[in-house]
Structures are given as structure tokens and as C-alpha cells.
Image (tube, rainbow, N blue to C red; front, side):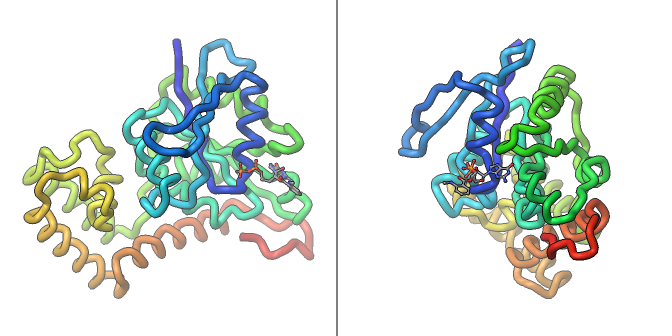
Length: 276
Ligand code: BGO
């Protein structure tokens, strides 16, 4: 069997270092189609199956603010990899998990690679990877790409998930009332607009349309009627949250992250540094 795995994470999370650890020297470098963004691929080492790792450009979110973000999210939506390795700079875990909450909407199996654990340990902080797995619905592996620790465990985990094809259940991260508003909108899309991006993951499609994401809207032939329903949905979110839609959605993501970090991390030294 052949499998395709994507490596996604924030800039400076150690993605290049990890890519090199995971693939060794076998590497093909090209460009993403139509743009001058470098594309790197390599085969995962020490596996019994052929697992090709595709290095996505470093991104902070799945919003289409930059070519890197557009390239990454188009790949994830169109190529549907068998697994995403989401590299997280664990010494800046709160900021890095923001992208994670967005990747969870792509309905693709995932493993979290908690990188920079050497830095985290020096800071006097412990991260409970099992607790994170329970809260996020997918496994986390602690690594240091620079010191090459945890890499074998990560490779074994990747192999196990792609071979078993185990469906992961991601939790709902928004408050109940917001989930209800999304659900209503998803049902409306299904019943009234069945031809609008039918292949997109359902939650991703709903969130991006509600956010009036230009890239997503540009893929729809005539969205004037749909836009009326989008506005009504946005109004409901604004009334419930007392905030504009983009800020409300970002704020709910951070509230979920803060709550999970509080449950899954612990200071091991009295004078542990401020952890975020
Ligand atoms: C420099 N632990 C530690 N401590 N550092 C790490 C780890 C880790 O687990 N993983 C990566 N780094 P990239 P992106 C550097 O280059 O892979 C370091 O953007 C330096 N360079 O070594 O490039 C890694 O691809 C001079 O650090 O990340 C690199 O995601 C002084 O994190 C940086 C100090 O890694 C970014 C560091 C000339």
C-alpha cells in the first residue's frame, strides 16, 4: 500500500528539522503548481509501507491571507492526505494550537507532534499527552526534532494510523448555542444549496462560508441568494456573542485551547516560566 501524509504547522515550529529527521536523505524538491512556493516531498524512513511525506508551507491559520495558506489548504482539501502530522511548537503551545483547531475541521486523521520538548522541560513544564489526546480526539507524541528524540515513536504512530484507517472523532470546540447555529446552517446548505462545494468537509465549509472567506466564495457560481442566508447566520452569531463574527470565532477557539492547556499542563518547578 502507498500512503500520503502531510506535514503542517506554524512557521518556526521546527517543520524543516522534523521533515529531515523523518525522511533522511531521500527528497524531491519542486514547486507547487502555478506558484513559486517550494514543494518538498520525501519517503518516511524505517517503515514497512511506502509513506510519502509532503511538507506544506508554514502557516498560522487556514484563512487565505497568504499564498502559503492558500497552497496548504488547497492541498489538504483537494488531495485529501491519509494523515496530517500537525507539528506544534510545544514551548508556544497556545498559539500553535490555534491552527490545530482549524485543521480539525478538515475531517482528516491527525497526529500532533509536540516539538521542542527539550525547551519545555527546561522551562519546568510537563505536558500530559494522554490528556491532550482525550481532549482533542487524536494522539500526541512528544518529540525534539533538533535532538532527534521521540522520532521513532512518531513514525510508529503514523504507520499505525494510516494502516488501520481508524476514524477519529474530533470534539465540538464551540459553545453549544454556536454549534446549533452551525448545524442549522449546515442543514440549510444540504437542503437548499446541495451543489455548493459538496466535496468539502461539512464543518469547514460551514465555518468558511459564515466567515465569508473570499477564496471559498469565489468557487461558487452565483452566491447572491446564499449570501442572504449567510448574513442571517452571521447576525445570530453576533447577537449571541456580542462580538463581530471573525472575532467571536477566533475567541471561541482560544477559549477551548486555554481550557485544554489548563487541564493538560503542569508546572514541575516552583519558578516555572510563564507558559503559553
Ligand atoms: C535555528 N528543540 C530546539 N531547542 N530547537 C529546535 C527544535 C527542537 O526540538 N526543532 C527545531 N528547532 P525550523 P520551520 C537556530 O535555526 O526547522 C530549531 O520554520 C539558528 N539558526 O534548529 O527551521 C531549529 O521549518 C541559530 O533553529 O522551523 C531552528 O518550521 C540559533 O528551531 C528553529 C538558534 O526550526 C526553527 C536556532 C541559525
